[in-house]
Image 1 (cartoon, rainbow, N blue to C red):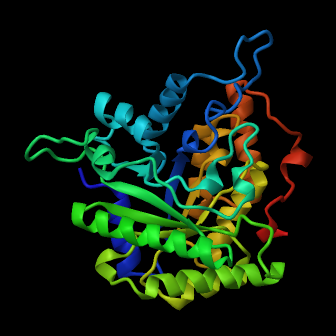
Image 2: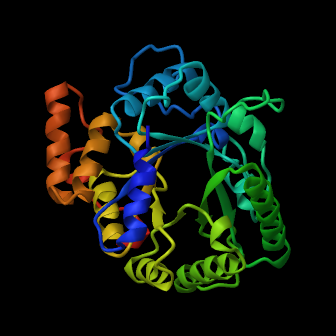
Length: 340
């Protein structure tokens, strides 16, 4: 089955003015948070023995979104894809593309009590490409990969030694990926270190320039399928999207938020040049993730405004008998810096 990701990427590249928009669910939080990965059970269950569901329960949640074809890409850890793509064969007859997190640099080591992310990011990768693709370092002759798309993340901190290590690691990854025929998409975080020698208003342009400079040395055959960045406001998004129309640019979701913030963020990003969104906690921590994703889709399809989406989503919660986390007034607040 041809995947909707490939269909939409083809349409976007052939007609940059089309309205195609790609949704990616970032369900790879076990590479960052550990046991709190599934998020606290909602609605809360008084007297429950454990604060968080099991990882197997989390897999059931992921199965639901894939079976409903709610997103174009499901991003998860290698261990999760070992279950979903190999044991359950979830993607064999699905238009959804499976993807794995190919590296876990230190700026995402954010488990309870950890303080690694306070230091400039250092490159690291638990995943190995053959294990990610085949589930083993020793695939059988002629064995086809179950997963052949991955996310690679880079964080620039205006720190010569730290950034050089990150770029060297990215170069080594690209060599391995090209030789293996492994497709990837690129995530570039805003700096994670407070010691930047940069004024806050310089950060969006600094990040854009580092992306353009980094990709300048890479031929199209080795470039990422698409790119995702923090939404640093309309000017920065338009600048990046305009600079190279062959690069499909999108946004990352960041932390949990109000419903309105999520719907407004994806709408504004699309309006200023983004062609995809990768949301994790915003989906996972929604009262009903499947209904939430349906509203995201309706917003980017132009069927409904962000304001209407909030009310429609809350109406769906009422129909399902699920209490909203916030009052309507609270749920209509904006929290993302790029929107304020």
